[in-house]
Image 1: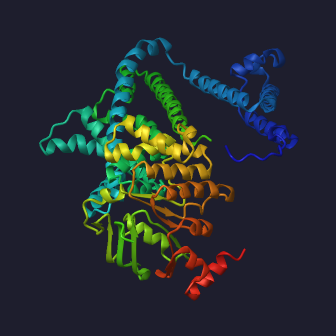
Image 2 (image 1 turned 60 degrees about the vertical axis):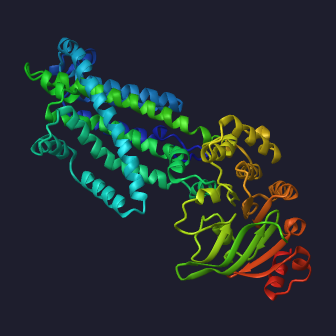
Image 3 (image 1 turned 180 degrees about the vertical axis):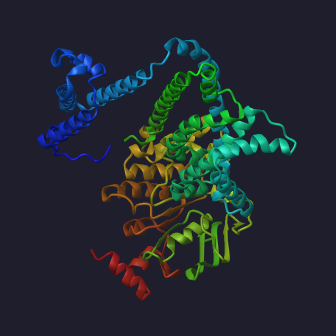
Length: 324
Length: 247
């Protein structure tokens, strides 16, 4: 949260000019569309009579009512406490979202039929591909970070070449290069190992930089104290520097993991049966693309939310030694 | 003095690039001796004691600690460092470890002492710096003076032959200076060999066997406290003492 002032400012959504502007804008927008033939028109039947015959009056009345409801809603939320505000706004946005999807007239039985397979095959594959990749990427990142901070010319050159190359190519390209390129060298790799390899190498390159900056953020004094007690390099790194760097490293690593979860969809192009692949293929036969794509989207979203929660837990855990 | 030599520096010189930080330093520290080094900032006093455990390198001359010569290719630097305790201006405690673990870490990880024994030693030295009740707290939960005393205990746990103090009270609130100085005085009374970089002239007068003034990378004056404070020989020393004792 930003640094709050101790003097409370007037609530924006209660200022008359803001309320009036809001009303005007919403009214204008809805007046621009003729909503008399939609369910809004049906709802307004007692006021405007037969919707299709109500003409300009109907449009005007509908826009007026929507704008009024909208402004009232916002003004009322303005009175609530911060937590309640956040909860209500989240809920309302979610509702609008679902209403939007409802307009697609999705076939729920079809979703119900395919969902178990989407989860047991798709989600499981997505999760384990991402989890294995993030672990390998972290290991690469530690090595890469130490190499990039070392005074060994070979180590630095190899590490910086690696990060430069894998950050410089699109991930999709890396997936193709590894899956199609390695067999040319005589190594036939399965789609899943190839996908994991591509994700690990790509994210390892990004995370090398995260780990490097995390290690560099630790005060020199920690190195000096460790040295002065006779700790060697690896002991200092393992016991003193990395444990302190972790709280710095974990938030961005969590972000990387969340983004990897979604980027793992790129390995669908080489035929790994993960969430994205199934979302595309399951609906293909019956042209029910939207059902599967929306289901998969929601699953990705929920997985990300879970990871965010886990991430904030871990962050709180590491904040322990900073509590006064 | 015929006691055995702990630190011996012969004609030591050090450069930072073009800057000549230490110029031809000769200094011998005998077992049980308490030496206070003072001087204006930038005079090389911290650099000098940081050379004694090779946190810094010297380019010319020779430094030997317990008979081990310090040089860039030495293999046994850990032996030297575990024998030389160092207390820093900014404490440099390990913030992710409890006070107790800060003290146990060195013996366990460097000397391979068992956890139970390290714990016993740690508690014994925390007792000695008079904060055994803080053992399970984290460093940030302690005051500056307490943190510095923990840092002293942490160094003592390694049972070093000599303790180096690098301006141990400079980062402390005035009220906390004396608790740290008391601890240091106690150590001195118990016969610990100490080299202290400090501006606490009262401490120097009470505890030191020798006081050294450094300026511009050189040892300007060296003497027993009585003569150093009562009858300084060099103009630089007189100026320094008049500045530091003015208020």
